[in-house]
Amino acid sequence: MLMTKERPPAIRTLRGWALSVLQEAGAIHECEEHGWAKDRADPHARERALEIARQEPPDGSSPDQAIAEIQDVLGSIGDTCPEC
Image (tube, rainbow, N blue to C red; front, side):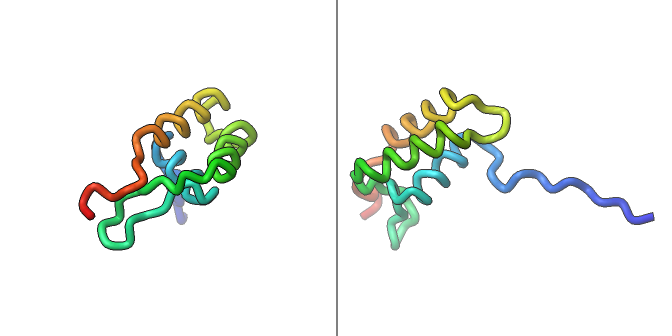
């Protein structure tokens, strides 16, 4: 009998989810050389990311937790790559 395992979610942390949402919304992008996340300083993209957090928080998190993580990640990312 063939047994299958449930696959774990691709994104395992709330921070990983927030980074994914911010990138999808266009609020951040990666440094082409080093891969560091950089803030695009686009207020419309930030608002799109927050709206996604409000409407579609990850499983096991409330909208408030998702919004707080989006804001925390944005606060920790600069507009320049630390290695450039």
